[in-house]
Length: 149
Image 1 (cartoon, rainbow, N blue to C red):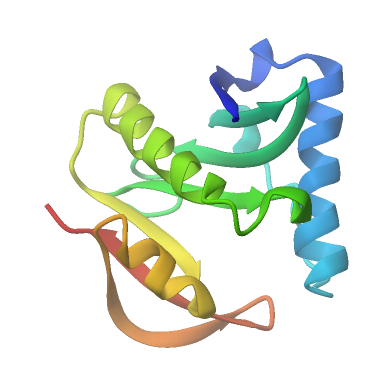
Image 2 (image 1 turned 30 degrees about the horizontal axis):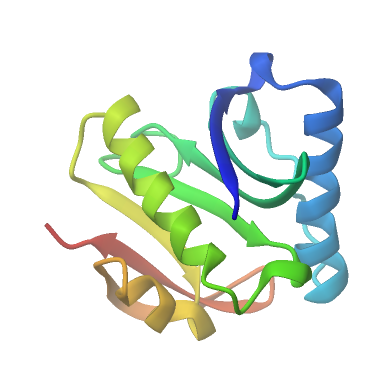
């Protein structure tokens, strides 16, 4: 079972920052063979969701205020789980925690994500619905999705 924490960037330990970037790189860059600029400056203002198992970060996402990624929407991004825990419903627990925390820190029902297209059904299970057409982001098909109230 994962233990979740929500922290601002300046409260993360150096080890946590390292482990976050290592997990994001392992999945988004190495596994998905996608070269992109992960470190985009938004980590400083984000809330970071850490899913830990035995003190190791194996799940992660970041929460951004309205106006950062989308003008009128708060957003959840960089959603990632390590290969070791995939297929065990831990990603669903991560998303439930993210939605709970985003509503706490940014009191809004308006939440938007940029989802990898192959994960659309995963996000549908959390009340996200697609908006518009699929598009390429960093060479990977994505779709905009908003939380249905």
